[in-house]
Image 1: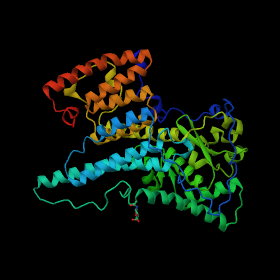
Image 2: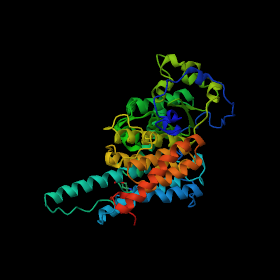
Image 3: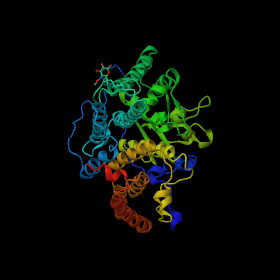
Image 4: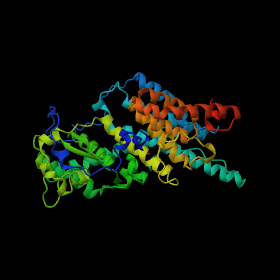
Length: 455
Ligand SMILES: *[C@@H]1O[C@H](CO)[C@@H](O)[C@H](O)[C@H]1NC(C)=O
């Protein structure tokens, strides 16, 4: 029974290197859902028709009940670190909260999925994480200068809000503009070469700008966090498969070209909805149009990209914007957990469940900042998928590793209510022990964070 436990929840496991894309998946005939084809061909690009993100969207202030519950519970726990009483840390605190609130609002179930701006959501994710890291850097610098008793009053920040905060040199609206600029470059390319509305030519122009002029590259190894945040991918030009797909989708959206995507094994496959996808995946002069962005899904002739037909694509479940954000967040959890546990090889989130042994004196050495970033990504994914029990279990385990025992007991208890019976049975003895430990630690006042930071 215990052997069934796996490292990550299904949501996170999708990012694990499971297998190559199998041609059978691509060629499989699933449910043949009708595909809307109202945008089979791009509209022409005279610049005026360009859709600027979600300018027209109605913003709603209401969240769904679940999103609200999770959202209101989470920022407190991730922001516990922010207790210093300086005006600068107050700014970081405000940015953390604002970024989480904007994120939650953007993905709230009040908004239509197609109106969600992937770019905005991912920039809010980036801003929150950057604010945490900047705050930590500052605290380190401050304690260093305190040690040297060199009183260096920290200068005022040049910015004081989420919208103004620089992320790798640009603020959020400048990064949004960057995507507009890329789309404009594609338009310029089309106009200068007098290219008409033929889909293949348009895609060629997009590829030329993204992968030729701008040099975007796909990275396969997920260890560098630069490849997993939108602003750093836009500035470094190296990105994970999902981030590169998101940039592709966002640029095409600005050109009026609707690109859809689907999870294929551990990969993500994108394509424009068209009646003739064979043409787009056909291997000509050694590669297909979507080779770079789709990577192993199509670049390897063995994956039989040329076999992709409208039928095989119909068999794939098209990812919603929320799904895509979920994949990006699951990758962030995986990335940060990997970094956090680097010194403890092979430590799995669920390892402690195996023997329900809780040994606080011999807790594994985890990097606190990376663990916190993993927890923050997990909090946001739970806002999207509140009923995903495996995700909640992983979240509870991360809180346990972070010695937030009270919160861990709470999350794991909720998880047990959703989980299949056999999984709940595995969790039960662990949660009981943890509960006892928590009571003990509050008597002895071990100084664990969950006891000290309750406001
Ligand atoms: C973003 O930065 C640009 C350039 O510094 C500035 O003009 C703009 O006002 C900033 N946006 C916000 C919302 O602060």
